Length: 183
Image 1 (tube, rainbow, N blue to C red):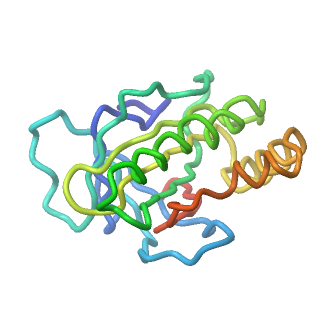
Image 2 (cartoon, helix red, strand yellow):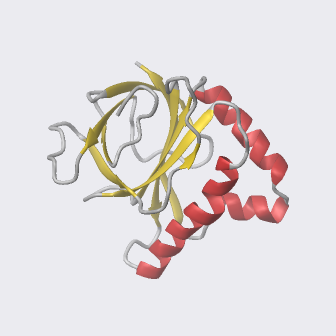
């Protein structure tokens, strides 16, 4: 992990701010309430099989589906973190449907929006307990400004039915969503 991207093959989200990089919450995302109270976030890059840090948090592994975006010549200045869960985790088809929705319906309009400052979108799957999916968005600008611009751009490029499909999936249960800035 370097200062130009926080994405890694496996990532540990520490809820006490300890990690390779440390972040503080800027703003919760609008919409559903957050099931986790994360004021400080530490991110630690891990290799498969490497033990997780001894701090409260969640572990995620990059999906086999590709990261989307472009790296800039500027370091990551902010993050948007979204943790998603399936309403029915025991229904394999429903869980796969949610993953497919995220990868093929939700993430592509974000990646192709041309939002200034949005550099990388990395999808992850949970390792162990926790919400099934992590979407890590990296910005080389203020993440609140970037998030606002991204919302405006995506809303402008999709018609009403497409926007509904982009925002909603019957299995989607957002467990957490917020922007973060360096601590």
